[in-house]
Image (cartoon, rainbow, N blue to C red; front, side, top):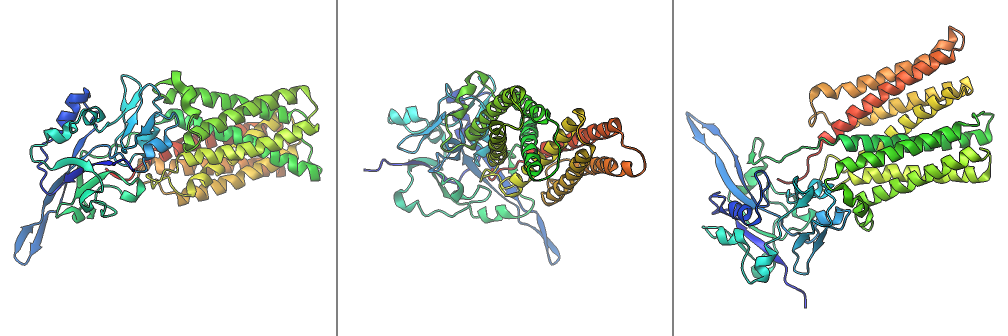
Length: 478
């Protein structure tokens, strides 16, 4: 026998917006100001329309009382890396605060804004459907508090309630998570799709994730360096390209240091860093767990390869095999990191442009890092110019991808032109490395300074662009 699945039943046609349900929830669970497991939204719109000689008002307003909808396909539990969110047989999704690491990934993903951060404890929190009240035979307190009886609960599929519209504006498409919410639409619900509609409280977009900007870019630098080194070794096998004997060791050491630094900085993102070990427990469904596991694996490989390169000749079969394996791990790492952001509830990120953009960033930063390492080791000037030419090609590719990904509506306008200007400047500087020998003699110091300047310009551009990427976060729903 299938256990009944509980659902909230809400009649938006008769809700007065008194917020008794919201207050009762806050009172029972002791929630501080700003943290509301149940929220009452006011949706309003319309204005004055001229009809002949008269002006007629077509203003409308209605209310929605929304909490966690304990979805059939809860994306919060799907993405949680620590397995802190679990679903009972009756469909209720509960969060175990003792397992939560406070990464806030569930908050990013939920289209209903249900998981909310408890800053005092450094963990997430959410509506429990008052499971303790249900187990005692009583209704949830929000249901008990509703004076107009527009908020009820029961089995989701009773009385034909399964036949729901795919979308009730301004709520997200039901097919994203299959929420346990039976909604009676207000007569003006369809008008919530019109332009100029006001939803109060507004959806908050507060992703100022500087620790994640640093983590992703450091991982791109490490992975890109290894992939570019692998490409050079592949070219050197069939051509007369002469690579400095210590280049492999320098690149592997750089990749090791940046990967370990990235992992250390990622701890600053966690509300409970002491439980960081739990971040790899949900490899089955969480891309965040896969990202951490891939980063640790790649970092361990980089450290091992660094030790091997210091102790062994760079032409040994073991080192060549390690380089091919490292290049494959590096490519996998970049793609896995991009999948963390391809949430089905965040349309701005959920496209093939995200992995393409991340790959371009990795190749560009990696090419410059290898070129600078090559110059520091006094390698072949001809190869250094080739690397500069390759970096110019990646600058052009990076700009082409950025032109397709329009984030200007989500970030301050003054920043929209800045990454492009910085990348274009780096391209001009790199072009100087190619052109200068035509007019003057080869100067290693000059080329090294130009490479460092180009690297600084590219790094600044990528920091600004990645911050704009995080600022572009707008999830579906309220």
